[in-house]
Image 1 (cartoon, rainbow, N blue to C red):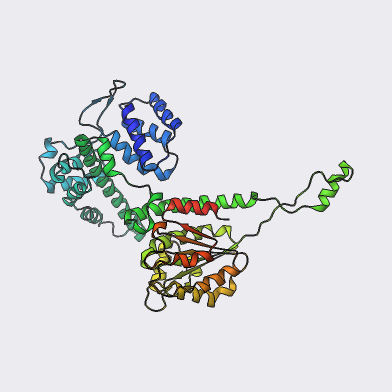
Image 2 (image 1 turned 180 degrees about the horizontal axis):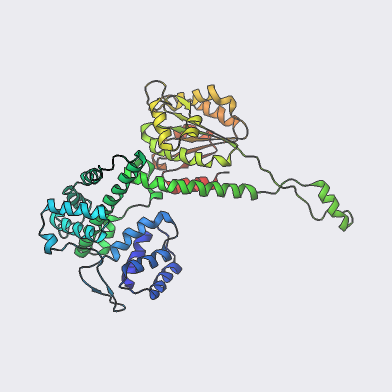
Length: 464
């Protein structure tokens, strides 16, 4: 047991989950209060001791399943003599194993409708044994084995059949039907996770937890690069960005309230000095009322950085309560203001769809042209930039070898309080190829490398 905990904590640290020495000790101490044969109780105790943020729960669950994988029969714990017993159905034979794929699929549909998790896991185990074709000793993460197993039952077809089984409820409202479909999608997703768990158990049994952990190691959502994120990783990052925005907004408000004292209150200071013979020993200050700055956000929405722009616009929109005014602009080779679009959209996905449908930010051929975009911004909106305005540019500064027109950005900087550039490319790639960030950097107060949510957090923490 102690060996498994040590390996699990090492793997959590490898993927970026912070685990201190004291939390390691707490995790071991917590297990004294749980029967070690109750796997879910052990999991809950370790999660409570080791996970400090909801953003890390999925990573913890995956690593726990590697190092505390149920085994086919009671496994003797070498430290305490306790047993961790198997709670899932496993890939057994018996009457279930004698069924063909068609019969198993019908049984699976019934189990999903009834919410029978035990039977669902048992069927998942049988299908993995039958279709995964796991090759002993092959150093793979198991994704291919999961794909081969799911191909035998076709999850999309399962959802369709589950929905069709309720066709008799045609009088239901559209909302109820949609909720019902989402419920079935959740159940099929649980089956997919059961298949992944079964594949993982077999890989652990073949190569050991440490070897499998290395092949399954994935970065946390906050460490995934915006420019290379997969579809699933983008969904995970969206789940992180909402709580991050609220947390950062509250933090900014607190810092603005306490970052400095107000001006000296002469009248109160002189009144207090009467007790010291007219000597103003203790200065009295007025309550500080720092003015909120204005925020102008210019986001490159060309294909190469569209994901990055979507996340940063979403975050800046959520932080609008900390600014007297937030105005948003998008550009490719032209520039358009989309402040109203963001304000009347329910979410960033709807806003993005509207922006794309209307060709916002496109002037001529839809290929990045920073020079023309900045020149157009200065011509149309430059005089609206004031000494309280912070301008944030989001983009990789790759301009397809067009004229940079850095004088337009310099003119904006001369009027603004700050100009800040967030670049989603690694700093090593700056000024290579058609990147002209070096032309614009002298006219910016700060140029940040901002490749992932962790770096975005660092930027917002410094933003005032």
